[in-house]
Image (cartoon, rainbow, N blue to C red):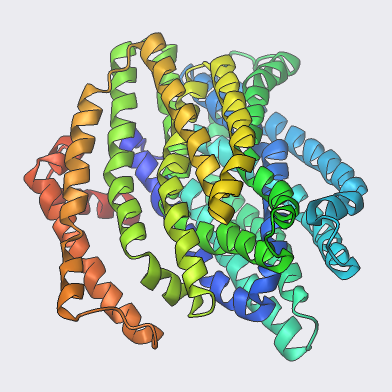
Length: 543
């Protein structure tokens, strides 16, 4: 079997692949804006919110359960049960996704009318309803892909896990750009067809990723099969195993659903409520689209840490818990938090201080003031929205399911309770501020659960985080150049890119220099910067 990676390297491997995937995701937003028009991006935002929600219902709990069970029975050398987990997980995922897709199709028409509100035109309602129909195809393929990923995640094959993310996104982005261009620019169809193709491409990307995963892991599958055939012990009873899978998966499904409620509340409540407090319908649609598509696409880059570390920590924390090795478990908790903060703190600060040039480069001068304003505030929640799911995943993996569900339920109630007051006080930015308040509460409560249940200590985490903040503020020194006339150019994207690249490189050098000075790199990665780069090359790029 493939060489096992450490938790940190496995998580970074997953994060690296997902980072490339998210980076590819940035490339389609600009051409999609151009082909569909900013006024149509709200349709994409609303549809993608439901896609994310339904995808979590169909698959979020299953991959987690598969990964945890595979890690559990693999540690016992029970290979027959490992193969049975793969079969049961994939079959259950397909059946559930088919049922969810059918139900969603039945309610799509009244749902489209309710989401857009009373001021929406018949053509807008029809367009959203059509998008819901297209969405159903992806709801069949993507959960099956997620089940396969969960299986190989449990085997700690994080390279295959990460590479499948890249393949899926590469095909998806290519489909969005190429198919959208054909429909709008060549066939001269209505611009909404660019959004249709964007949703269809999600299914296309999943199909190619499934083919890749099945082909790339053939050697591992053969090895597991041979070991299972030679094993004397029979596999666990399939019914008992399915019950165990559901016991793990259903709570995680609930948690995943609760994790999407912020975007769901924004999509379902903002437009209708905004028009009642004096915000124009078109402006409300524009603000929602900018927040949940344009800004979220950029802010999603640091959030790859959520996916990478959430995927990487499951088998390792499961093993520590199975062996009752509390000392190692506590070390893992601290290591995960410190490493995520090391990357997240400077990225969030850079997104805030370079918000205007970044938004201009991505989306041009149209609605630049509005976009920059929304982007700055949404960058603040990038911090909370990255940390919160990682801590929730740790609690889930460590079997604190009831506490995690109750905490996220409380967070959802807080989001809903603060949504209307925040929108009244802060306008469109109220959507983001109410999300931040809810996430902060969830983070604090989950950290307390880890402290009470496993004795997790955060003293060292706080101390190192302080030095990370200092290093990040040192990295802001290039902004001094703007006071002597070396400022960003908002008349040419090319010049703006060159200037931002100079500022970005200087900020990066200053951050890592300051982090090295404070001993953070050595403390976190057990080697200097040069050694860390060599290790990453060896693990991720050399077979």
